[in-house]
Image (cartoon, rainbow, N blue to C red; front, side, top):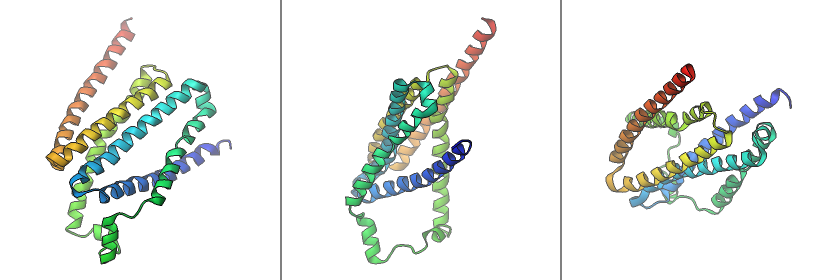
Amino acid sequence: IGWSAFYIYVILRLILGLSYGGMLTGGFTYAVENSANRWRGFSGSLIVSLGFGVGGSLGGFVVTAFTNLYGIKAMLSYAWRYAVLTGLAPIVIMILLITIASESPIFSEARRRGSIERNPLASLFKPPTLWIFLKLFILMFGIFIIYAPIYFLYIPVLSAAKLPAGMISYFYAIISLFVALGGVAFAVLSDFIGRRVKYFIAALFSLFLMITLFFLIYIGFLLCNIIYFYF
């Protein structure tokens, strides 16, 4: 389709992002509302961390496999479409599962009692709900600010190290596996030590890793520049 292909792709990705947001929030709520009170922290943490981790890992392995099969030139030209199409499989499975699943008991009970908000968006911006929302928003915003540099910075770092594209996607898959393992561990902890303590421990751990990674990357680039300049 010529020059318009890029803009069509961007528009479709924006639409996909909207639907992905609906699936993520809907899946999280559905899992929590179908869990026993004792394990709601575990269920909520598990679906996010395990979903991100395992899904990202499988995506990384798929890209690695297609890159090794077709080569980097073919991947940049046409084969990337095959890798994207593999994402249809879990969506089809998810649709089939949700069609045979029953409504969550908490939502069903709230609807039976007539206690569902008619306009939840408007109620969200009224005190005292507004103050709770702002605190949670800042908390979650901080989580993603901490998470994004650690998770996405490795791509330009590995690219600068002249690693092959297939190797970069392989590293992505391995990193995602560790995200899943860490998510499962902290999900279990949340139901024993509490959500607040778990978050505090995870935040301290992330802060330590961010400082460590910064200096490792800084020293690595510094050494590369010194070696390049003198040798």
